[in-house]
Amino acid sequence: MPYSLETKFKITRITKNNINELFADYEIALKIYEDYTPRIIRIHTNEITSWIHKSYKDSFFDLFVFILYLNDTVVGLVMLNYITQHKVVVIKYITLLDSLKSNSMFFPYMGMIRSYISKQELDVNSYLIEVIDNIKDLNKKQANREMAFFKRLMHTTGFKRIDAEYILPPLGLNRPESSAIASVYILNYLQNKHKENSNKVYKYEYLNMVKIIHNCYIKWYQKFLNSNDIIKYSAILVDMYEKIQNEIKNNQIDIEDVYYDEYIDYLNVHIHSDSAVDTSGYFYCKPINK
Image (cartoon, rainbow, N blue to C red; front, top):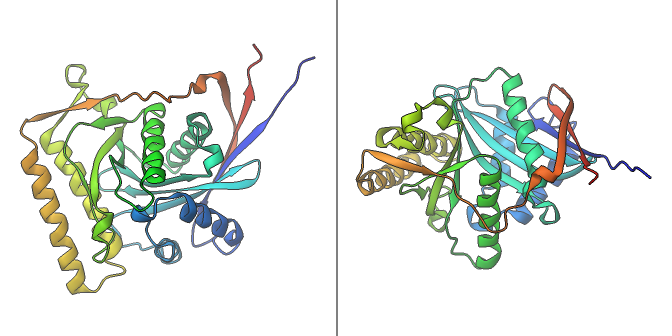
């Protein structure tokens, strides 16, 4: 006898206009973020809430924080920055319950986030994300497992790794341990390239990306550090930028498609969109009968 199993995926953006109404769900999402994001790279949740409440209009970027739902239950949080001047989205955090950490589970959420941004009529040339190569932490095994999931996730959602030096900036002045060797992954960039250069990025283009990401950090901490401390923090990032610049010897840098052994074939799941309203979107997944 035929059967039907329906699963509802939903995202809702948290803004200063709806945070009070959705505060219970927002608190659950923040708790998931705290529980499943490695401590060493986790920013303070009060900083996120402060940015949402104040919605700084003079900022270098617009902050987007999404609550992720599965069958109307909160299961995760995504935070990203949209840089209007450069038409770039920098994804900062993707957090899901451990039980849902498979590529096939996150794939619809990523599609819905991109769809939401498109419906806001925001022009996006590229998506960027920093992925740590190795974490030195008290719970190193768990942290590196988290990064391995992140890398697999980047592959399945179309991101490619830029094969160049990158150093993750520290989270403020007093957390130097949060800085780490990392890589920048990129989505959409290749669509804007000529075919003969489809697997390359010029050095100056990559360094511009690094500047964009660094400026996001500086603008973020301008809200929480005094003027003297932000000068010190900016100097740290300038040193990092110069180190990255000096490590790149060639004018062109490879963009590589990285594969992972634990890749999950999400094509076994049939995904179709239903509807989306203002700050929410819905996707339904049904198993394909074989």
